[in-house]
Length: 166
Image (cartoon, rainbow, N blue to C red; front, side, top):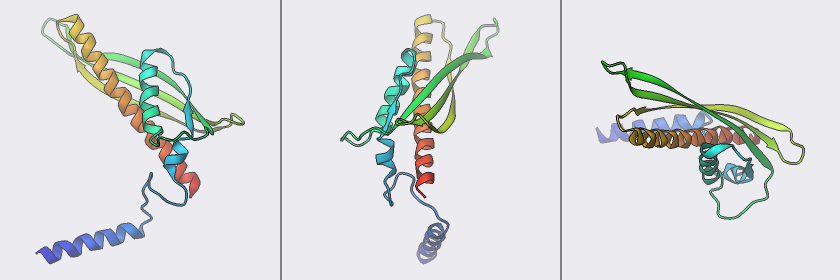
């Protein structure tokens, strides 16, 4: 039984190596992580924009050394809230927060747009009787959504740089 399990794992790894599977952020001919570290992020309006910008700075600049910036990432952020569940008295008890980010990666030297994309995230939160508690829960939902959007943008940019290098 153990031999069969080991043979199965070996065969699976053999087929994965033959299909062209590569690590997105792994070391190859050119390191994607160093390319991502060359991106500066343009200012984003309001507090939620600052939180998203900080999340992206943390995700993109994983190396401690500063590299000369070659690209700029500009973002537009928007959000909407919609009620989901209602109590017997017709008061909302749950809501969805939809966050949308549109971004464009441009070269700094000639401002040429290289890649643009969108990232959407929907997070839910409870609407509580205490107004302060609802505000705190909505703020937490926004932070979770912005973290998800930053991870999604990071992944999209990583795939973009991997494609142009191959």
